[in-house]
Each structure stands twice: as structure tokens, then as C-alpha cells.
Image 1 (tube, rainbow, N blue to C red):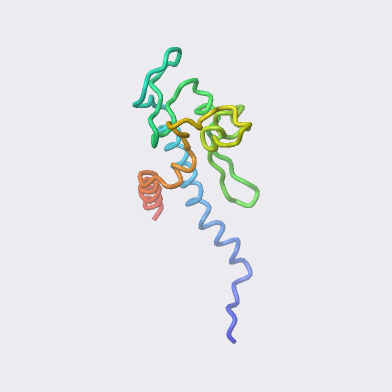
Image 2 (image 1 turned 135 degrees about the horizontal axis):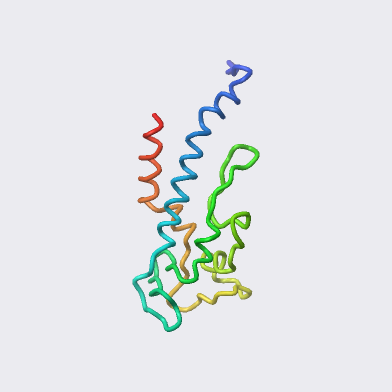
Length: 142
């Protein structure tokens, strides 16, 4: 059996090479989330809310701005990045979790109605528009 032997500093070289790409992905994702969560919805405009609510399948509509205010990115010790609602940026409102996961009976936001939840992180994860933006941003690195 032949074993591949890596150069002693291969891990460090790979990290240096990939780090700019990882940061571009984090930056692009953060800009995308801020843009999508800073819009009114196309649903009903309920009394007392500044904007129309979102319809099922849309990103949550901006209402208080608390979710938008806590969006950020951070690099972890291992070189990876996290993007999303971060307490290190601003206090993450309970709605950040409840919009994504409305089912637990202890959820502070009841979304068990026929109108459904407004998942924003899982929606972004599978959003082809975000994927296209990330590909375009990575192409500028080449």
C-alpha cells in the first residue's frame, strides 16, 4: 500500500490559502442576510407593526430590527467562521430562534398556525441566490 506523505507545513499552507475564501463566504453571507432581513414582507400589515408581515416561504419581514441588529460574523480559533445572530454583536432576540424553530411548546413565538414559521437561516442555507453570490465573490479571488 502506498501512503501519501504530506509536506510538514501542508496544513498551514492550506489554511493560508483557504482563509481568504472562507472570509469571503462569511462576508457575502452576512451582507445577504442583512439585505433579506431588512425588508418588509408582502403579507398582511397588522396594526401596530411598522411593516407588512412576510408570507410563508419568505424571509421574515423587518419589524423591530432586533434580529437585524444582532447579525454578525466571527472567526473561530480553528480558522472557521460563524455567521448569523450573535450575542457578541447585540442581544439575540428570542424571535431569532422561534422563527427558525417554532414547534417546541416553550417557544416564545407561536407559529403553529397554518401560516407557518419564517425560517431564515435554513432558508439562506439553501438559497440559490446566496449560492450564486458566493460563487461570484469567490471568482474574484482567482
